[in-house]
Amino acid sequence: MPHYLDHNATSPPHPDVVDAVCAAMRDDFANASSIHAPGRGAARHLEDARAELAGWTRTRAADWILTGGATESIHAAILGVRRARPGTVVSSAGEHSATLGILGQIEAEGGSVVRVGLDPQGRWSADEVLEEIGRIEGSGGRVSLVSLLWASNETGAVSDVAAVAHALRGRRIPLHLDAVQCFGRIRVDLEQVPAALVSLSAHKFGGPKGIGALHLRPGTPWRPWMHGGSQERGRRGGTPNVPGAAGLAAAIRAARREDLAGQWERLRESFEARVLAVLPDTVIHARGAQRLPNTSFLSFPGIDGECLLVRLDNLGFAVSAGSACTSGRTEPSHVLRAMGVRDDLAHASVRVSIGRGTHGDDLDALVAALEREIPGLRLGRTQRQAP
Ligand code: PLP
Image 1 (spheres, rainbow, N blue to C red):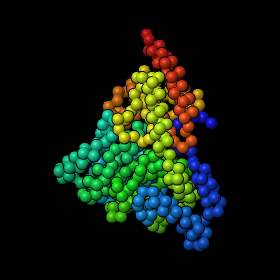
Image 2: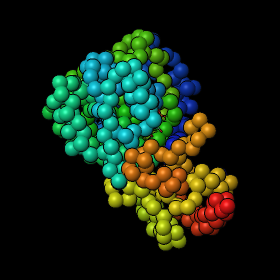
Image 3: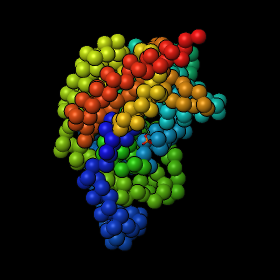
Image 4: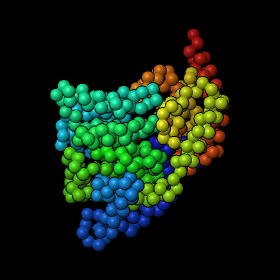
């Protein structure tokens, strides 16, 4: 078993989730839309998942739409509001690629999108969002919706969602939040943060892949995005994913019962302190911001992050690179770029994200591996660059 330190990409399913999914597949295989007894039995898993979501977030169960993950939830939120309320979409430069992708498509089709920047700690600013809205409305335009990332999947930086949610509620502009990385890590209380729409994905907190949800507050201008029947009260067509819903409900119960975020934060803080002790020029991004308790995004000046990732992989560590290889070229993270981080430093980054099953031993071993490997990677680079 490698040292799995990539929980922001996905977390391993909780044992309760595996049991719940298997049991639902075996015992409740009926179509949840069927009115016969087996169908009603299957439908109970959907209602159970909605009830768990509602209890966790202080919302109403009926306002949750189950989706095939967060990417679908984000598409449903943005496209669904735009259909009911055309206008400019206001977002940020630090969004996940699911949001970046659909906003790029909207622009390609002639729509208007405005993106606020990030501060050096990786946060968008509530004031800047509100100023942009004022500017758009002041020039006779209309804002369709505001779509923002609550916590960054890369840096873990948490932005001030409550300020925007309260300001926009008063102005009747729908706010959509991508809260995918928050569940099980920081409190998601949708009474305190009264956003119109909120997206999540179960596999980030021990649930199965391919199931997520969209919270749709009553009164939000929105039209269904996926058609096909009366499923999800006419808000999302397609045969419901009953085993996924059973797994989602089990994951929420386990996350609430175990409540491990404090433990992860202690592990992360000790890991970062030890890395800085052995490699003092390490840059830890967003360290001055409120961060997710499990995330550490580090740059090691003078190395290539991809080389480090491969080296760590060979040594049995699963971490993530801070740059993505697109069309044969390695591009630094758009998030680090938006924070104003130099390209060479952005190229020198890896993300370590911890979660259920991470032990102090995993991080001890990683610190030792970094201390051993980084000087060699720096040397290799200098030698390659020498004439
Ligand atoms: N938003 C954020 C912040 C994410 O981290 C992810 C997953 O990486 C998504 C959206 C998309 O989730 P999914 O791939 O489960 O649809």
